[in-house]
Image 1 (cartoon, rainbow, N blue to C red):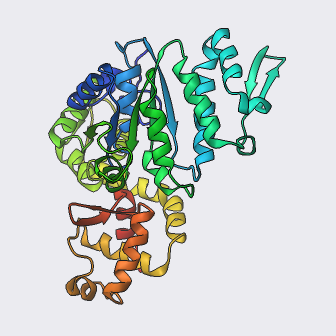
Image 2 (cartoon, one colour; image 1 turned 120 degrees about the vertical axis):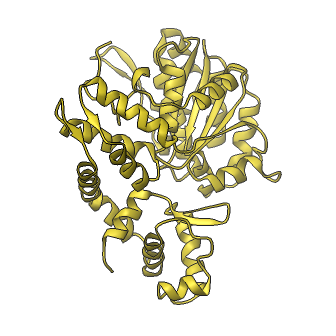
Image 3 (cartoon, rainbow, N blue to C red; image 1 turned 90 degrees about the horizontal axis):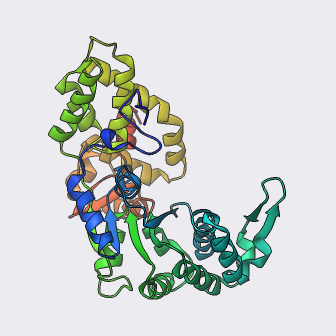
Length: 379
């Protein structure tokens, strides 16, 4: 394999030599899936859930006796969209493997007959399912699971942002999925989610269909010392150096969120010539540049919420960390908020939008990049 000239990878698959830590989580995930158990994988967004699964199941030395199916449902808003993605993924990952699996696909998914076609140029069947083609969602889902059950290899199905199913307008989606999942023997599932409160309710509440149906893994930030050693090692390998304080500045700014760390270290690696040292001034400048680069997206996020919700986000950014009671008189007075009821109403919506997170009684802005940008602005 040709070595990547920049060891801090932010897109695509990560070779094992450039994968940082996660040894405990990797071992757990492999052990649970090898024993044919389902797994619920929780962390905040951009912490590396998808990369961990790819590292364990598609990295060097991974077994070849299964098919990995990744389904990201973050942007879905209905049960039919979920089924559409599952059908497309089953076609791409299973049906295209062999003529036998292709014939089985067309024979099993009879409710989607209108979605099948043929490409004379490539001399291959095509599958173009539209939402309008899914007229009997429950029946089509049943067909998809029947097809997966007949696959020639075991399937590991990763559903990313699984908490999204709780926001669908259709009733009993969780119960329906649970029924199909518990009856399939040729697949295991990884339910990945970034809204920890919702995921914990789904899998640890006795009132919910998925109660205690999967083993749990929680991804926290990689410990600073571990990540620092990783960064220093790869700089040294290239004949460069980086100050420990420079790494600490980035780590603290982004609360250890893996994607942001990797992005800034990638840029730091680029701007540091061989024989030179990257210092805190360099990394501070890179963080500021990255915030400016992301400003259009962050502005767009803010444009979608109300003024009281914006006020609460600004107040949270000024606090600079988790807040225990956002409805206290002291917090409201300090940030000149209107009232505790207004704060409570705003926080409820921000939690729904995943702009605010509540864990163990503490509130904080979910995305540290958004928090940094808000803090850099003036009302």
